[in-house]
Image (cartoon, rainbow, N blue to C red; front, side, top):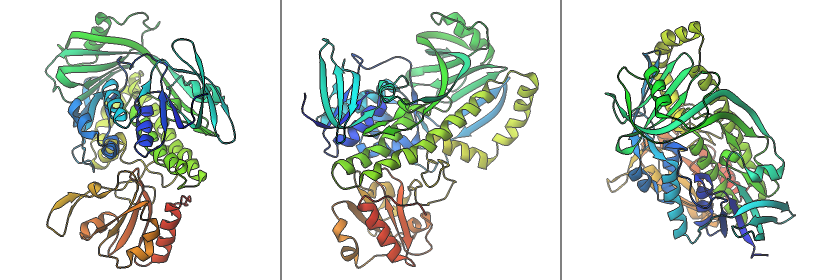
Length: 511
């Protein structure tokens, strides 16, 4: 039997690599294995949302991701050749007011290289074939490329092994949901047309659907749905793609070159439980859904940031094991909302009935043009509205309750320097923001927790206002950038108790 490791991660896609990095950078002994001989470079996920870019700042890799992607600020939707939506991320409350079009394999490459700098390398051609849970550890049977089966021991196992998860199957957990009847084609190609090369376009036409995702160097990734029966089979040809473009693109649009193409079916599923004993499921192993909105890879990455700091805290003995229960409690509503929302949107895009499509064409432009609707839409797509405050999975614009994302803003330092509030947050620990004025008894109140919390005093009244305080207030921000506790001068004892409980690993009821 190999030496025991703290955490074994199964699956080296973006989700698995993200959580392996979150653990390794906190000093957790982490092992990551993948059954494939090498990274997958096929047409998979494309698009990184603002919230994911914010979180990757904590790992120090956001600038590298930006260098490898194309920033898309605007998206457009047409129904039967009439534009029903044009929306922009420009007003998004984030340092990254855009969608970064970056292929999954580029994300994996950046994460793999960064993980290696932390002393952890992906073990390829290593397949999980069995696992047995014990009181204080899990035994995993790992089959190597030469046929050797290794019995590996880990305190915890994380299944990040995709929609066909072996971890999920070995746990006996059901994958609840349905498949759409429609079959889809996806391809990377070059278009010859007059439309901007850095905007997203979707064309809907009575059950037919083609989405055009821009990529660097003039490439597009397109997703095609067509209602023909029987569904096309075999290799996706340029002729098939061009027929779809002829129906769902401006007149005269032509495909100049196809780099790669394939077929897939949309599934909308979520696991019945995100964990079992000492084993957790994250990413596509826990939930899969429509490609609409480029949400899948991002949701998995955010699963990893949610679970990573919690599991590290438990392994280090800083938190009670009950903290791990909040992973499922917080992320399951997000997955449920996502599956429900993308199912609804996908069905709307695939409407075939002439009456329904006429209503879409004539009513949707008036509804979707409203500023409030556009703000809600862009916040949801970018995932900055994700919240753990209640069971809805999202927060309204402007709210800063416990469980909501901590907002960023430019603040003025006493030196006159302007700095982003996010730059003041600790990348590994909780951060306590003292807003609106100094607190003179900081050491007396929080000294015992100094190893686990970074304390920052911010005098700029704009920061206090952004967090909903008319005067002085304090906000405890979790390592994943969500508000853990808050209070103003009218309730110092309650706030102090909440902070002590959070930093001691207790689970708070949101209020």
